Amino acid sequence: MNRPAITTTLRRETGRIWRSRFARNVAMVASGTAGAQAITMAFAPIITRIYGPEAFGLLGTFMAIVAVAVPLAALAYPIAIVLPKDDRDAIGLVRLSAILSVAIALFAAALLVISGDWLTVTLGAESVSRYLLLIPVAMLFAAWQQIVTQWLIRKKEFGVIARAAIAQSLILNSAKSGIGWLHPVGAVLIVLSTLGQALYAGLLFFGARRRYQRSDDLERHDPRTPLRELAYRHRDFPLYRAPQIFINAASQSLPVLMLAAFFGPAAAGFYTLGTMVMGMPSTLVGKAVNDVFYPRITEAAHNGENLTRHIVRATGAMFAIGVVPFGLVVVFGPMLFSFVFGSDWAMAGEYARWLALWLLAGFINRPSVATIPVLSLQRGFLLYELASVIVRVSAIVLGVLLFQSDVVAVTLFAVVGVVLNLFLIAWVLRTVYGLENGRLHG
Image (cartoon, rainbow, N blue to C red; front, side, top):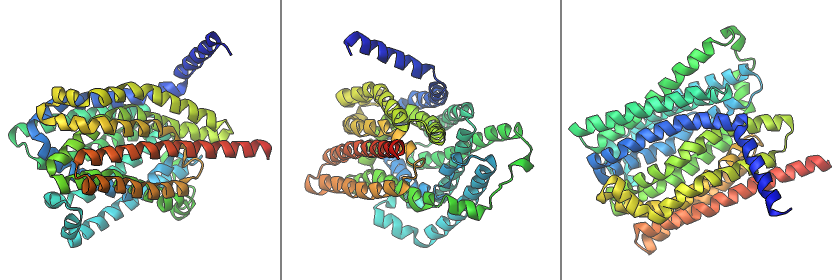
């Protein structure tokens, strides 16, 4: 095929993708996330100048522990809410997830009362020992947030998610800035971040409740399957997906905890700001694509469509969207961070230029990750995470203990992350291609 024909074909395919319902749904979710992130970025230069690296390091250490605990909050059952064909079974999963979230939060609170001091000493996180009992609260609200989000995704109520994200960001960042003028300490950031999760869950709940009241009568949405049977039917989520998310969160939280333990809270603050800023493009478009692509790839699997084509197109689109913003940070990271956030944050820009490579690879793997539960690849995903956490921890330890450099530790962690994410995409594509070829020749 000659060059003009290739160009015409690419232009036609690009236009068809962006005119599709999928693209419109992505744009709707992304617009809400974009608004929320724009608000966060508008407040960030103010907040970083009010609190400083040490306060951000305290927040980063606390949130690193929360991030590891949250995957256990409802044992990943909320992710299954999208899958059932019948709404009544989906309602049953909502109820099952809510019950589990309360029980697990109470258990976590009791455990922290008994052994909280041992946990902070083991993690080298004594600076956040006073705030440990906020962790079960954050777990509970994060679980409720995920439950309602997955229900809204199932019902394709993406506008509710978008409006809630904007409102939560505006209120939370206003509170951080206003209270920070009076009391600029890390404790304020920790408390407000926990309350922010509660606020987001509440906004999503009220939006979902309005949608639910417009649907059929409650009686028609009683679960058709007992909760115990639903729990067993979707047992691969607590058995494989919850441990996978837990291990992934642990591997991503380790840099914050290790930087705080070996190099002090300021280093953890640099890393926290770097991942927060570089995570914005991923949150902006990556989450939107995941929220829309997950039900779409589920529907495609039910209808026997070509899944390989869906994944390849979505992955290519993600790379095209992400390469410019991430690339700019790779080239100009320290200068950009100093200009935007203040001269105290130049080192965060040095971290960010390496983290950008890792986060770009994680950005383009969203379609592959969304396909994993559809094809029941949870067990393989768990094995992947087990192997990857060993490699990631080894990279950090090498940088800290052998080179005694926080920058080298972050660099090695990022490079390993790139390789692992590319391997994940290749694994999913090869698995899907093999299944489809087997079906064609079977």
